[in-house]
Length: 83
Image (cartoon, rainbow, N blue to C red):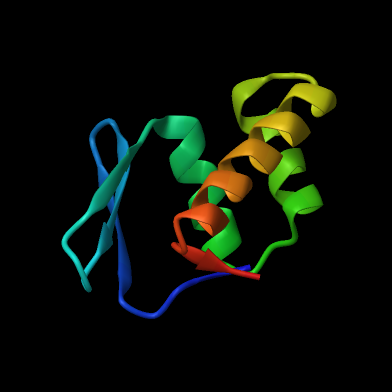
């Protein structure tokens, strides 16, 4: 998965913001969402992203995998990321 061309990711004190430069829409991400999107932008597969999320936030693997799947689903639907 990769961020679509024209989408910028910027870290903030509270997580990150994704800005779609085409139409000016943005997504505000909390800390866990920022980790997920940053890891996806690095080119990590969703399973590896879930492992990173579980380690960083001390959540179980199943919860991390569900969180990654849901955010990826939303980002694909919004055409922010491309498979």
